Length: 249
Image (tube, rainbow, N blue to C red; front, side, top):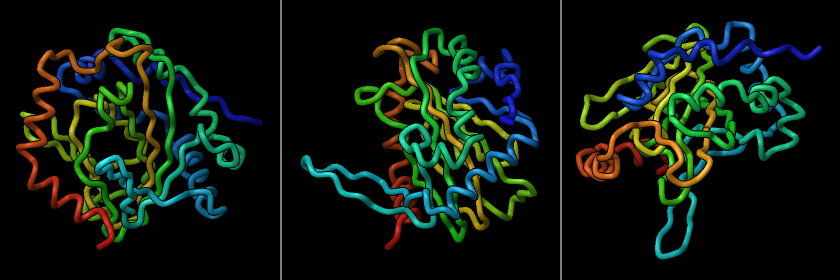
């Protein structure tokens, strides 16, 4: 018998929406419940055991040519684009197909959200991490909100793997990847990275897409484009270090 998801909208209160609109991010603890988090984590383990996760790689585009730079110890798949993964991970497929959270987030962005995607990720530790980046470019894709759900019971600070949010020009915030913690942030506007993990780290990422170009903004700020450029400049050295740290030499 297929388990029903809890009401995902109930956990996204006015304070979370306000944080997303004004600061560009919000943290929601106890989002899904212990049972469902374990079911999702078990699904990811199943996908790994059946070799249905692939290596993550950074796409580098230079002079019209795309090359792949493989990250260390990071494995993942996108559920919506992988039928075999959906069959082997029924609880992840249920979360992917649920529209409750998307409908709730419409109120946060002030406009319709047309679709969502879901990616699962397994970080094997041993320093596995992501470099500084924005989730896409508003001129190239229409993601509005990123939602990361962490599935790491008994996590400690020594395990690392924190999500570092850089709500420029504010001070960076390091968010521990605690079990059943959901982190929401503005996809195009929040510079972020995953710091090196020393232990195995599980997470699920949902992306929510706007209906049409310009149809919804997670951050209510007319200076977003300028802040993105300034953040790239201000963190250029840290950006370079994070790229070297995340990829095989």
